[in-house]
Length: 155
Image (cartoon, rainbow, N blue to C red):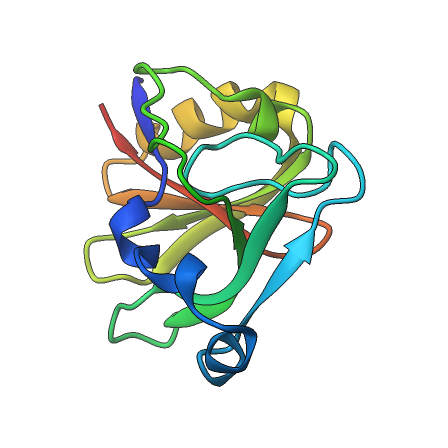
C-alpha cells in the first residue's frame, strides 16, 4: 500500500515571524533559539532546525475535525523554508529517526487504530494502516513529546 506524507503549508504561519514578542505571546507563540540537533523538528520543512537558528514555537490545531478527536498542540516552524514534498512512500529522516505515534482515522474523523513504532518501521506501519479500507488518513506524532508531526494519506 502506498502513502503520501504531507508537511504543513508555510502560508499558515505567514506574517508570524515579523511580529513582536508580545504579539506572538497573545497568539500563543514564542521565539526559540535552537540549542541542539536533533531536537527541533520543523513541520513545514520536515527537517530538524540547526543549532543557533531561531524558530517559532506555536500553538497549532492539527486536528480541526468536529469529533471527540479535535486536537491542537505546540509545534516548531522555521522561517523562510519551503514546504517539504516527500515522494510517495518516502519517509523524511526527521520521522525515521524518532519514536512515532501512528493514529489512524476513518472518514468520520474517528480514530480506528493507533500504534507507537520506531521511525525505521514507519513504512510498514503506514502500509498496514492503509491496508484497512476504513482508514481515511493518518496523523503522525513524535511519541515522546506527543507533538503533531505530519499527516499521511493514501498515495
